Structure formats: C-alpha cells, structure tokens
Image 1 (cartoon, rainbow, N blue to C red):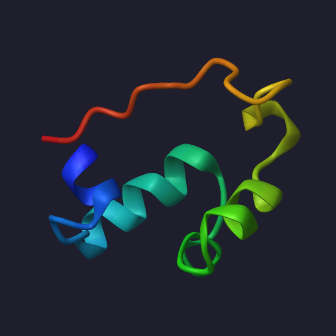
Image 2 (cartoon, rainbow, N blue to C red; image 1 turned 45 degrees about the horizontal axis):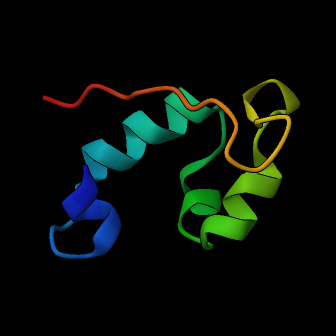
Image 3 (cartoon, rainbow, N blue to C red; image 1 turned 60 degrees about the horizontal axis):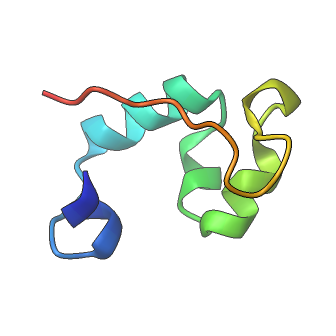
Length: 60
C-alpha cells in the first residue's frame, strides 16, 4: 500500500473499486486528488482532527 501511495507501484481498477466501497465514495472522486476525496467522505469516515484514527484496508 505504501508503494502505491508513494507512486512507485500502480493502482489497479480492483484497488480503486475496493477503496470506493471501503470509503463510501465514487471512484471518480478518488481520482480527483486527496483533498477532493477527503471532502467527499461521509462524516462518519472523517477523523475529528488532523492525525485522527484511520482504518486499515487489507489487500491481498
């Protein structure tokens, strides 16, 4: 996952589908950049403050 986030490994369409389902936002919103994607998150998925708790996504 860290290699994908850093840009040294490619994201697959399956990865994007999983992230979309996990975060509850459409794939196009994931592709519009991190700031846009965070704004589109349901309130229940956003941390209350910067550095708040995050959920681990299992790939594999």
